[in-house]
Length: 334
Image (cartoon, rainbow, N blue to C red; front, top):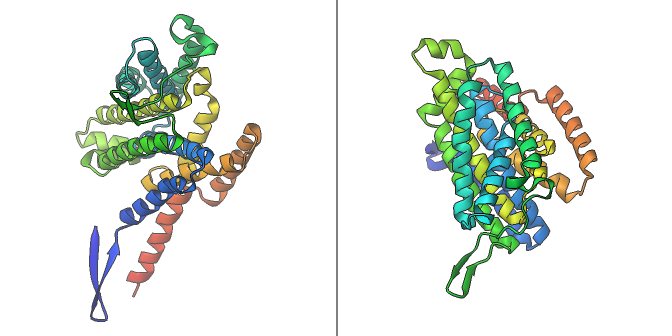
């Protein structure tokens, strides 16, 4: 929202915080296209995938207060469903990744109905068990998933008219633009959801579930909706990203991804939309560009997480909110 204030007889305009953050995220998202480096573009594609995954987790953890370890499970299941749809049933990658997202959205409803009946602590265990079960199935259900070998030779999303190739998903820049378009759509939908009355109800259930229930709100229905939406976007992200890799195997359920998502949401500030997205870009890009060893990278993340818990308990988003509150109090103080 744009506001206008009179300053010394002249009209000045200031942009809303959302608009400023939107510009900041757009600059981060467009930066890899300026380099022309395939490596940077591939890292950028991964950062966009993590931005959607972390925002999906933020919808569950930050807005409903339910800590879920199922997000990587949904991302992996969506990837496998898309790969099977393309490799075994000949579906186009464009349609296959949507099928993967729809499958995980429905699966989340089936998992969420019993999982949301238990306590919040038990929900954590159920969500973790779901991801572990999906990992086990990917390794053991060889007839469907090809076991540890995975499903190789997946096609990249492309558009061809006749013999003319209009869009080649094998090209890093083209795939980055595809991923950017998908991320913009996914993040836009989640942003609209959290700014709608549904988002305010989710926040109310997070702050005081019993009070929200006493007001006649069916808390479980809204939590199930958020769980399903987050799972659908995670599944679509996994489905789209494996067409860039050209293969899906059980490593897609690696615990490294779960740890990364949690660190991104905690450092970005659970319940803050924009700072979580910025944290996803920074925490994905910096270790990749510095080429840290995977184990050393986890040590680094652990140290950063402990440091942030001591210095910024509410994450970067919480720090900014507190700073703004202090500034407003100073301004209104007589």
